[in-house]
Length: 155
Image 1 (cartoon, rainbow, N blue to C red):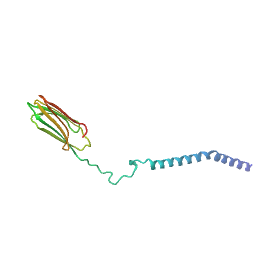
Image 2: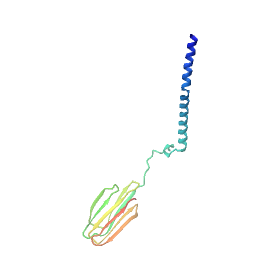
Image 3: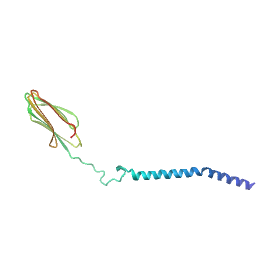
């Protein structure tokens, strides 16, 4: 009886190994395929963010400042009014008492929009928007109660 029990024990062990060897081999193959796909993908589909960064990567990039200048010129007559949007998009209303008038703002933004609307009681008015001393927009009007608008969408 001792021999019969040991033979039955071996058969049971052999049947467990025979039953699960396929699952073990499949798991090892799946792990190898996943590892290979990951390595191949990182070689061929590497983005700039995945690459090593230079030593000065933490340095702050300093932008060249932009100078936006609003100008008005003409015949003010009995007075006038100007409304302009600053580089942050905030409106400002001013009463004009004399011409020529100008206002310059400086910003470190990479792009900026500029808008100016002016009205005078006189009969001639010109508005200009300059960015870094380069004329970007100029509008002139000659009639009583002249009103002009200058807009630069991206400077």
